[in-house]
Structures are given as C-alpha cells and as structure tokens.
Length: 224
Image 1 (spheres, helix red, strand yellow):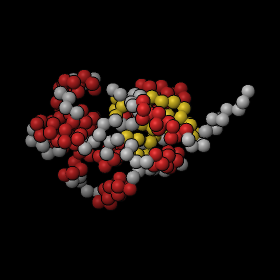
Image 2 (cartoon, one colour):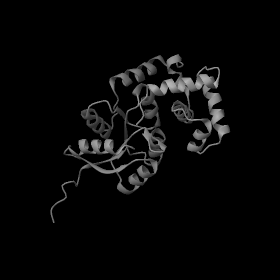
Image 3 (tube, one colour):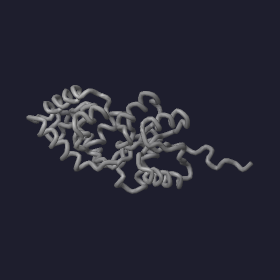
Image 4 (spheres, helix red, strand yellow):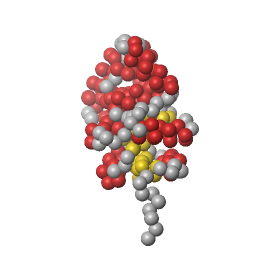
C-alpha cells in the first residue's frame, strides 16, 4: 500500500458559509507542502462537530456564517478547545471587527481582500504561537493600549457587549425586532432592552437614530 503523503501535515479546518470561498481557501492551503485541509463546515454546528471528529491543528473561521455568528463560534471554540488556535478570515472591516474577534479568542484576523499569501502567513504566524493582524489594526490596538482612555465618538461601538453588537449587526441588515428575537432565540422584550442600552452607550436619542446608525455602519461592512 502506498504511503500516505498527507501524513504528518498540519491540519486546517475551514469554516465559511460560501462553498466557492471554502474551496478557494482550501486550494491555497493544499498548495503548501506542510499544510492540509482536514475538513470544511458552513455553520456553528458543523464546525463544532468537525473539530471534535477531525481534531484540526488550526481553524479558519468567517464572521458571517450560515444562521450563526462567527465571533460567538470563536468564543465557544476557545472555551471548549482552549489550545486550538483560530484565524478569522472575513470580508468584514478589521477596524470594526478585528479587536472584537481577538477579544473573543482569535489569534489572527485577515480580510478576504488581502492576497492569498497573507492568509498563509497568518496561518503560519498563529501556528507558531503569535498574533497576526494588519498594520492598520495593529496601530489601532497599540494606540488604544497607550492612550488607555474612554472610547471617543468614533469608537463608542466598542463599548457594546457581544450580544448588543450582534443585535446591532442584525439591525444594520434591516431586520425588525421580532425577526431578530426569533433568530437569536430571545424575546422581543429582551431585544428592546438591548436597544435601550445601545442607545445610551452610543448617545443616540431614539430607536430611529439607532437603526440609521446600524444601517450606515453595515454599509461599510460587507457581509460574508
């Protein structure tokens, strides 16, 4: 029987809700002599099952997943498999989502607008125990650490809790309160409570301003 040429390679799990994107990422990884894609998933349930079954050495996770939230998935992976490094690969703008992803437990953040080599470099940096982010995000994190001041107007969105941020994102998609409640398996009353807290944190006077702000923010954050 011929030897398994994939034996000994570092195993990568790709989690993305777009099949074409998954295949593209997989192709780039398989071109590396020491890396292999051990599995793919399109949502939270599939990702968690794949991790349990395939035991990857690294997971690449998109933020916008099918019927699920990538940042919440990163947090769950960190809780259940604290030694499994996660690299976020997404279309979402790093200056808004990058820091939140790192706080959730990701070890790196790469946008899909970057060249393939950036993804490979990110994988290798994270596997080596480091952190991989763009120069722009690095500067933002460094500036925030040095200044250690309360968020300014443009960064007030960073004061939202993870759940509030999730609701904010769905508001930005134009979803009504009841649909958001159903999607998150919460009551409409709970969503309204989150909205009230967000208005206070973002210094907005009413729900109309909150919805407008959420939509405007979403216009600068491509989905996927």
